[in-house]
Length: 326
Ligand code: UDP
Ligand code: MG
Image 1 (cartoon, helix red, strand yellow):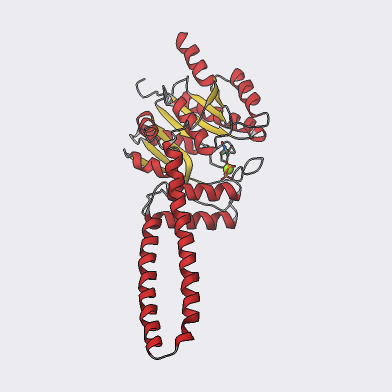
Image 2 (tube, protein in one colour):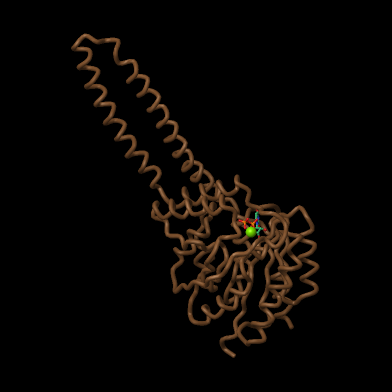
């Protein structure tokens, strides 16, 4: 049948030994039912990406890949972070898969949305976003900060699909375009909408983490948000420019005021205005320098053109080659 295509599900894993068993069980069941429905080919794969885990994650992945024909994996040489792991998986899988789905290992994203994504793909969509229709299971803090982040990005003119995380399907062509964005600090959520092509949305309910704890502590969340903002927009720099002009205007007014005071003989008067302007300017300069530093830092890391990930072992390709030989 012509519409039987090869699907790969990329799953980044960082110290996920507690969830891997269940994740494998649920994903293989989904793949099996899609094969039975004659929608995807038998050589479709789950591609676990071990992002330098310190626990048994990789040994579980290699064990499962011997047991199930659907399971394969890629081991990164160290921890490259969520986005790097996703990229490594998409790079490996999109070589010969017609479509690639990315999903977190912790089963927070409902796997039952996968068949819906596949249907959208079969209807011609090349990018299918998984969109959460609730955030009840996230803490109020996470919800609040996420909301603020999406608002602020919108204000900066960056087009994000609200409440969509890194749970999505992309056609091989869309993956190729995605991978042609060569920046180091890749912010997938911002890049994917830039890929273009026909897109669709699939709604699902976000659940609790199946087991283990979040690998996104506050520190990583802040870094993630800062990366998103500074790799997509120079509005912060423009805001500083506006602020600068405003401050200059105020200082002109102060200048005129103090001249008038001097002419009238009240010389000692300007102390408070002096203090205020020194402090205000000092503050503004510090903020400006830090924002500029942020961009200089980005340029620094971009010009180095360092690899975004390094694959140590690739069971996906090993299996695929094996299967093609048969
Ligand atoms: N992850 C990763 N490398 C990291 C941190 C996280 O590959 O350095 C993976 C993690 O295993 C999970 C996904 O990224 O599959 C999302 O992480 P998590 O569920 O901890 O984030 P949260 O859902 O709490 O935002
Ligand atoms: Mg999670």
